[in-house]
Amino acid sequence: MLKKFLYLDTDSVSSYISAVEGGLRTSTSTRTTDRGTTDGQIDAKLLKGGKAVSHESEETFALSDEPIARFERLIAAAQSNPAGFSWYEATDDIDDVFGGLRNGDFLAVNVDLSVPPISRALSQNGGLAELVDGLEALRPFASVFGNSDDELPGSEMMAGIKTAAQSFGTDLSFVGEPDSDSWSICGRLKSSFLLEEIEDNATVIGKVSKIWGSGMWKPLVALPGSTFISRAERRKLERQGPNPGQEENFLQGPALMLDVLAIYR
Image (cartoon, rainbow, N blue to C red; front, side, top):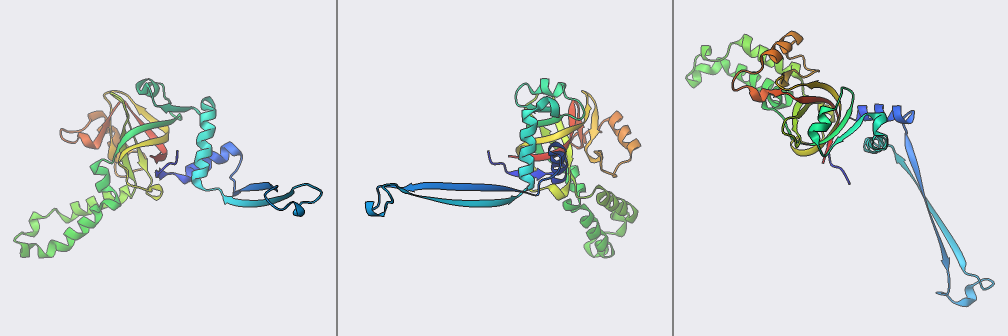
């Protein structure tokens, strides 16, 4: 099956395949040979000693070792030795498969993808920092629109919002819902490896980095790698859970966090 990649962490793919194959390939060569025989289709006078004249042609191709080719070899190696790779494919009995996973296991699972609104807004691509700049630029003209400067958020608050957005960076958090009555997955996606919009149904492959049980909550704006919320504040949020109406900004367990290798259809 030809895959359409939405996300591919080429750095991690290269690192893993290098460990498997003892180094990285730079290129591969393919040779095609065509052998044929000219027979009774031509005048018999052209035949030597009553034998047909043979011909041969050869083509040689040199192919660079692209990231997708490395990915396919890595997955083929994992599927041929699932125990050695701690490789799991959650196609049937998803709850049983998820329940047996441990940190460090590789998982392939089909899910319905979504990017929480808080993550999209806080990413630099979400435009929150630009919105703050625009509001600050309009502050001197508030009276023109029938408002006073006091009716706008304070400059200190606006600066804090902008700093938070810039701190979060361009990466996105995502949530994936498999065909399960209870489990969910989530993870951070590095913007440099995003190829398409993250949405709808797709296969996610990644390495399990965290598992939390039923009744526990994780704030989606504080996944590892984000400096938006301190470790102490993150733990407080996890203990308290979301305030009413803020549930979409959290993920309730049981759930898995993945270091995502690829997302494709």
